[in-house]
Image 1 (cartoon, rainbow, N blue to C red):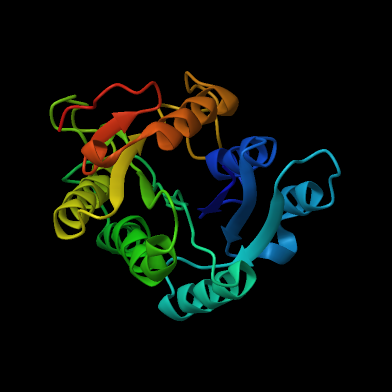
Image 2 (image 1 turned 90 degrees about the vertical axis):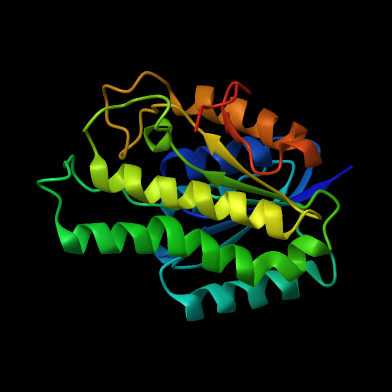
Length: 237
């Protein structure tokens, strides 16, 4: 069965790798790659012009911190789908400020990070729910981090980023309770070699993304609200 996907933050890193892998999958019909500046997304345009992909790519402008931009993107996606639903939404877009602690964090960084990493996925999900309701799978995968896990005990590092991802975790839990007809869950991609993860990270992007896609495709209603890593293992809260 062919499927439809929307990935936010799709112009680089994990988002771009997700788009590449999904377009090569024979069971994927359409991929919507959302990013802030489609005109400068050179890698996405290269994929769009490629003849070796199985699925169809649509590059959509979306700034997840701007509600008007999100609504415009939703309208564009709905027009392209022409009554067909959206099977998978992956809220991947996010920011990671410099390492900080509770005593060194900057209030402006904290607020802008929460806007991007918590309010962004909340607004995107709310806008796209009518399309997700029409989809066959109804999966919403929110990209979190093990740094949001108190049980994992990462320590004092990256306080602002960790706080924001904790907020995303709670948002996902609340949505699962409110909408049992949907499958919202959290996925931890691991520490990946991207601009955000840095060159010292443990995983290549393709290693993480291969696992993420498998997890996302296989989740069922019983996984709603869960925190799962790219290998399929449960992450402690």
